[in-house]
Amino acid sequence: MTALILKNVNKSFGKVNVLRDISLTVEKGEFVVFVGPSGCGKSTLLRVIAGLEDASSGEVHIAGRQVDHVPPSKRGIAMVFQSYALYPHLNVRGNMTLALKQEKQPRAVIEERVAKASRMLNLDDYLDRYPAELSGGQRQRVAIGRAIVREPELFLFDEPLSNLDAALRMNTRLEIANLHRALNASMIYVTHDQTEAMTLADRIVVLRDGKVEQIGTPMELYNNPVNRFVAGFLGSPAMNFLPASLLEAGDPRIIGLRPEDMFLSSDGPFRARVSHVEELGGDTNVIAMIDTHQVTLRLFGQHRIGEGQDLHLGYNPEKAFHFDPEGHRLT
Amino acid sequence: MNMTRRNGLTALAMHGALIAYTLVALFPVFVIVINSFKERKAIFRAPLALPDSESFSLIGFQTVMSQGDFPLYFQNSMIVTVGSLFFILLFGAMAAYALSEYRFRGNRLLGLYMALGIMIPIRIGTVAILEMMVAAGLVNSLWALILVYTAQGLPLAIFILSEFMRQVSADLKDAGRIDGLSEYTIFLRLVLPLVRPAMATVAVFNMIPIWNDLWFPLILTPAEHVKTLTLGSQIFIGQYVTNWNAVLAALSMAIIPVLVLYAIFSRQLIRGLTSGAVK
Image (cartoon, rainbow over all chains, first blue to last red; front, top):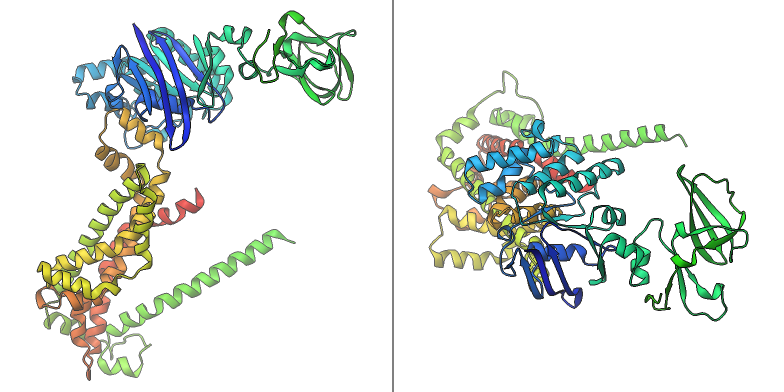
């Protein structure tokens, strides 16, 4: 059974088209990440799925049921927000049970589900605390717990890690991945962070300007991007784009080279001047200028390279991407 | 430039200005209260002197208690003030929520129209209001005053509250919708508690003009059984003779309920006034 089907969903606010003809199928148990720069419509798409916004046209099916005119609470979804959105006047237990009470679930069911969720998320000690008495990470776990107890057909995450600091973000990311495994639930996750997308997703949907650019597994997108935008968005540091005319005069194409596919080579075709070096211990990132084009070079291990030094750079031709001037992938 | 010294001077100047203003503002109240405890002659002989054993007298309070029905006036003023505040806050908050939360055609225009009332004094419409009240048979009823004061207070209430409601997290309201709360529950249980400081601010801003108003009670509720405190005190002010003891005593007593209401709202009020600036 499918968890979610979107058919030609469009959304416009006045004259602005925020979502354009989006179609997508999410299988049961799948973890799908919407990723894109801010303003690309990914959060709006999530809100359309949740029923917090109505689509201007198109259909939304959740777990085999068309839900275009069903209110959010009856769509079989649960949502986790960036700002946690916990009810300030209720304690953790109250926050987690509110939706179940609204559904008029029997008390025994409510208690059992809360006990299960709080065990999974290590919230047992905090059930009687209020949101104001919790740290950011704990609040986000409560927000996730509030979603789990509903046992929804589909989990929706709206940038849940953006308000956490780096260390906590990594931990919570792992927790969400474990949760997905443990619950075998269908999840949709919105983020602008390509690392989160790559690490969590079964499939990634890359959005730009309200349109789907590409859908695929993280490695499909990484190894085989359809255009320059997808190629540049996934991977960190980002792909380098250089005019092919640097190698062969008159060639209008653009070459895309991942930082890890470039290397130092005394007979390499590019001459570059180092402008900055980031030594990370395990890796060394070298930022250099080829003419007026900035490139990033990712070297494994530690290297002693000084700023202002001149380098010869080579690349692995098998791993090079070629784009036409409009950004479409050629080879 | 020595920053600490300059800050010290600035603080001193600020405190000086504020203390001076406080003294100016409190001085009339102080004079009213001390003179209400003095005999008539002492009031005129030395209006600024504190009451001593010779000039001390409760004659003013006795007059107030014996003439007219001051407990009733008190009760009327209280009903009108609390009733008006209740409706201002209720309808103001509901309108503000609708304006800040829902997108609909003419939303901004309607907000502007509501705010226009802040700039137009309601007294301009006194004649029309009187005609309406006569037609509705509400003259000499406390409802007449409550309705007028509610109308008078709503524009500012909507203006202030809708600003504050825009700041309430949209995610919180959406979380409520996903959890199956009705729009009324979201408004009453999630949004209202979060704008409580703004509500207190609105309440205090409206409370004092309503309590002190003489204009509308004089026109709409002149009958004995619906007189408010301010209007009731006027019987001691005659064209030729004014019973100053009684007037001052009535005024002194009229301050007390306002102080009590203010004390209830003030903690919230301070948060309301500063939250926009500090946070």
